[in-house]
Image (cartoon, rainbow, N blue to C red; front, side, top):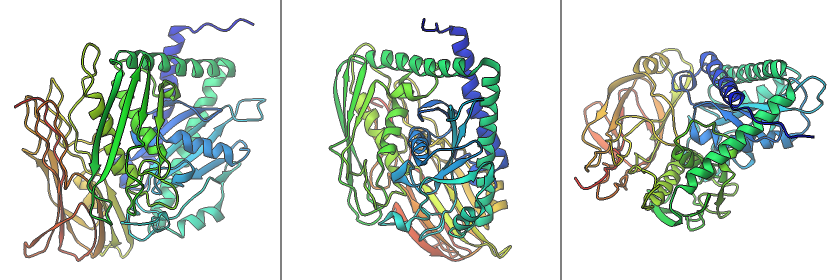
Length: 528
């Protein structure tokens, strides 16, 4: 039997059809979610997968989600035989997840006269609270069991009906059950949208053609990625940086990588990184792989789908029991958001050493943190619980040709900023200042972007947890460029007394007190 020939026009059509399905899933989730974290910040991701759980296409959502979601889909597949109308929920970082607030829901897609799923759709959303020892579920923990409810792959929807007993169990273990239930319903509806659109695609083109072009897109991405890697001069490029601390012990932890470029393949060895630590900055292997996928996808200058083919020429070596391949019951709440940023920093720092024709144009370090801020308590206006979570933007690193951007999310986060109006409407807060932190980008021939300032006055008693980095260390500059200015956290009393806080802290605050987060600037590039 002759192998079908790839039609380049149809390849482009299917590339956009698959991507548009993931994008429409994201629109459905955003418009129907309850929490500001999802509907305003869009802390969510959607993607389409083949029958083996390999990614075909993704929407332009959160990099740290999308590089790791295939593990969640494969965990759902291993859970057991799924029937039409079933969906699997999972957040266990050691069974396909990243950290507990990121909850993934996976749905199978069937074709007529097929007993097994032919595709899968999945979405992941960050929930503002999933229980645990601190409101917002981003605590200064020493075990994953302190971070919230752990959900192994479980069938949350059976034959199109939500398992109400299981849903009640989950909702009984969170602080804001009504908001969580609304967000879960939005995630389920997003998957229904995805399954419908894939069904329509198969109705139009037939199962075999859709399958053929799904694999052809992976092959296409692989070819382009190999060409991109081949353009980088062969060699081994090593780089290391540190995490400020783990929130428990005040010492820095090394994150290191050795990148070997050989022909059209790349090997990234992270085994020189620190052992897993007591605090919550441990990352599971899926996070490390996500960082690798993100960086190498950024090197590709052509418009290709981000899918499983992108990783075929790339091997990732980690050491089980290390901070980049943590083993249970390690605390991991901050690994997904903070350590992932440092993974990107060291890969970019290593690739910046490549010289000669074809060497990539690598930026200096961006802010290197997500400035996670979680606040919760009882809203004095309504008498009901609330849980707020947000990551805050900062400066990006300058490149050889242009200054860095100011007050934007960078690298492993791709969310929006929560508008002041939405924040003050949903929570007992008054935003006293929201501004660019000017002059915090590193000097250079081109200047790093500036961080931002978020100053929130609390209108109810509450508890706050902040997980942030680049307070003790600064985002590096390149080729003689100066580092960006480190960030700063502080609590301000009603009388104006200001107390500096470490990068990772938990505190009980009273109404009238303020929390002020000043985020880092990006590094400069070239001698000023």
